[in-house]
Image (cartoon, rainbow, N blue to C red; front, top):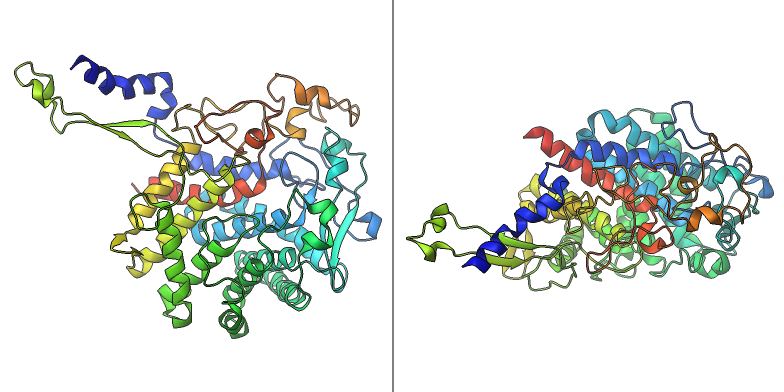
Length: 520
């Protein structure tokens, strides 16, 4: 009995060790910070309203080596390279977050739209600067990664890389088309002229991607691999791009393309992850809306495969295959407290349940899969709820509320409700990582140290144990390992590096829960 009582008290002790876990999560605060992070990733000339004030202008001559203007856009993670594939995916996901959950963002909606526009402005330039050409990268990552310096100090070559009809890249081109199309929907009412420009550019880029087929990993292997190789190929992006163009344009040409080419491009495949590289699951969720809301029979297949994906995430279903970290020991309390009475010792009937914790896909930057999965769960739940539909898992049925519950557990884990009691969003909560693998954040700011810090001199700041001098507020890092362990070590880039594509889907997930909290 004493042993059981000690175990019963463990959760109380756990919350004493990590008091932040006992408090209600302020999703609205997390939402604002998740959007603010993108200001820390901006390249180019910063606007007057820049709120991440330790940053300065950077990359102001980007594109000049090719006589084009490629100023602007986002640095993907902790380095100073502008990679086109993850930047386009980031922009698509930011736009999708606004489209699905923008009405729940309230005071953060304009900031979210500004984050979308910073990406779409750059992609528009990259797509329209030269006919039959898409500029897909600025800077050689091999050279960039040999330095540890602020973006304001960059003195490595800012080489420009492009795809053409002779050197195609259907993957990055179709993702760019998806980003431009999704962004066009974001600005359809507030800036119709800009929206129209984005949509027409998206159409041209998609036609280019489809007409000149091939992977950019083959055309530009030395500078995109192993950093952002298109491991999944380009079929998934073609279907993804067509799906976004159909949604943005309502042009039946794209629906016809989807129905004619879907089987070849992976419509019938079950896939169990969603990321900057692999769009198959996201496409199925996106297209399932057409079947659920508009009863387009040709899209029923996408609903079925969306269900298969959801079922793979839920323990106990017929196709469950996801992995979760050990998480924490939960103890189911008795319904009544009479178990403490000496006359009824048999009432001490405590049930111990070891629950899964964090969705776990791989050791490198695992939280990208967690935020993307959470977003898809919530988006699919929204589609299902609006039509009174459910998820079919063989003989089991899942309701939208169950999808929301799983997403909430993942979101809450990231924000501090985990065995370490640590928020993996920088600047959120009372306990978060201090040694972020990020050049601009880890080096003295340009304002506090206006003198040049050279390529090699910066490494002393990478390897020091001191906290980063500049807080990269809102950055969600790579996150803990498969045993819920995290090393707050700047050299451990797999866990300590942020990325735009980790945050982008998280913006939508946080907006959902911020809106739900306000409604209660």
